[in-house]
Image (cartoon, rainbow, N blue to C red; front, side, top):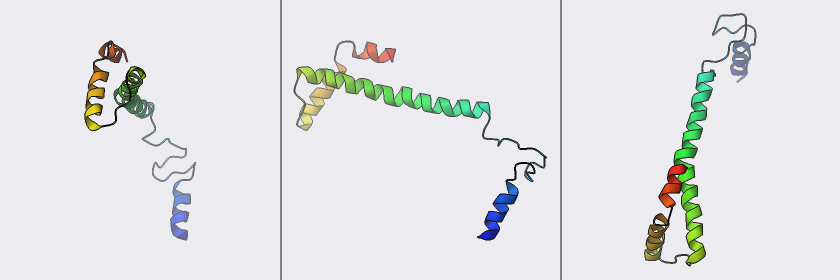
Amino acid sequence: MYFEFDDVRRIHQPYTDPFQRMAFWKAPAYNSPYQNWKRGMYAMTTGVFAVEPLRHFQSNMHVLNQFYEYPRTRSEYNIFFKEVFRLPDFWSEFSKK
């Protein structure tokens, strides 16, 4: 156990990094501006293509629930969800998001 910690301490010295063989600290290869931009795009596309449609569907369910009672059985759920998609401006508002 002591040798592992000793190796970690010796390998990751800020001024002599034997992996790079340079006398200064070099940023790791996975920390470039392009990699950071790519990670941000992963998070953004997840939000755009997964979270926003669900939030739009949920808000339209809430609108429909103001006029009709909430479903109790499976067949009522099927009818309720079909009517959520048939609400006026559902698809036009969905395309704007």
